Image 1 (cartoon, rainbow, N blue to C red):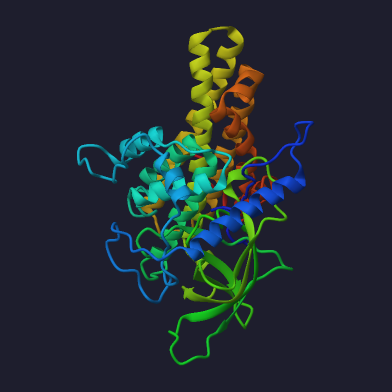
Image 2: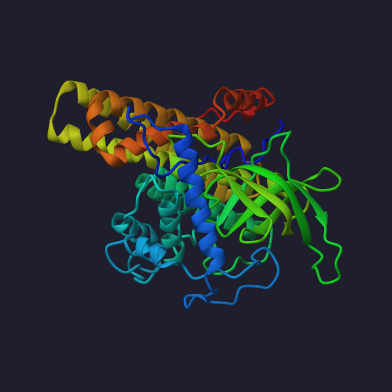
Amino acid sequence: MPVRQRAPSGTPFAPISAIQREPSGCPSPRSKELAVNATLATRHSTLREEPTLTSPKATRAAPTSGPGSGPTQTAPSPATEARRSQLTDGPHEPLLTDSLTDPLTQLSRFLARLSFERDDPLAVGDALRALVDAGFDRLPLPGQGRTLERWRMLGAVAERDLGLVKLFEGHTDALAILAELRADAPPSGSRWGVWAAEAPEVRLRIQRREDDVSRHDEVDLFGTKAWCSGAASLTHALVTCRDSADRPQLVAVALEQPGVRISTRNWHAVGMAATASAEVHFEHVRAHLVGAPGAYVSRPGFWHGGGGIAACWFGAAQMLAHTLHAAAKDKRDSHRSAHLGAVDVALDSAAAVLRETAAWIDRTPRADPIRPVLRTRLQVEQAATAILEHACRALGAGPLCRDEAFAHCAADLPVFLRQSHAERDLAALGDLLAQQEHDNLGWKL
């Protein structure tokens, strides 16, 4: 079965942040583009003009070459620092400072204190930075005995905000990919994306560097990559491209280099707007090979990451379910109770399949995970879709208009769920089943 790159672990979605409105109250498409491009231009001009700064939190020096190489990070502007100071109500708590408190509890407490503008891509990027600086991105790697813990932490961030988890999942997926493919460790404090959506007419190309000082894994990157979530807020990315023999290849690239240009002219999203997906143009940009040709999609972790996306969908469904539960407790009626009962059935079923699949991955980390993960994604997708419908029908327009978290989740979730390929994924699952013998279907208690 042909596999579309970055299909399970995320086709990037992107954003519009602060948008002007016409007198009618409708967003102006031109004002959207101008607002986002102005924001991105300010961000990158600030980064390039300010003096370099070595972070006191760095635990090791950034390598001068390898996946994390590139220009050193720059000192943030006073405006940026002021925005970051508003992220939480108190000092950041590093991960595992309290050995008696489990990481999920610490993360939940941190998220409860995290404050940012959900509509602002750069504010969401700063929230990602806060999570990284506090160490919450050091999730257990999938397939090493703690996959469920990893998925629970992804779900917790999703319950807080889907725009934030889109960037957080991409960053943590990149760290897992670098580990699985035995690449160099990323620099301390770096923030990564995984940009692997490919269109036949728009592909990146690489060619070997010809100078005498380059490492054997260094290449030059040319072309355009679409669907680059969080482009203005990240320091590095893992990017799929094609080599001179037209073989698929993954490379790591530092984004603060000459020759990297970001464009949002084709981005008009409303749901998942704050992920600020963009087209990124590369012209003679240094990158580093990660793994052998084709290794990105052939590794088991490709589908393990796809299960992590389902955990994000589950976290969003949890948020909707909790809102409905609180309303049902406050005012009981048979209409709300019926919807709450349906939500309980859907959410419990989704939780059960996620737990079962995580345990299966940990028991058989090198086994072919396509069928169990594909089935899990489809089950969680169906559950999340049903929960969104039940919550909205039970609660009416009130929370859609007056509850910021609920309204954002209701707008973002349908877009995020389209990282599933709907009936195409159902057909792919059916094709896999049709190839199995009766005794191997696994339809048993």
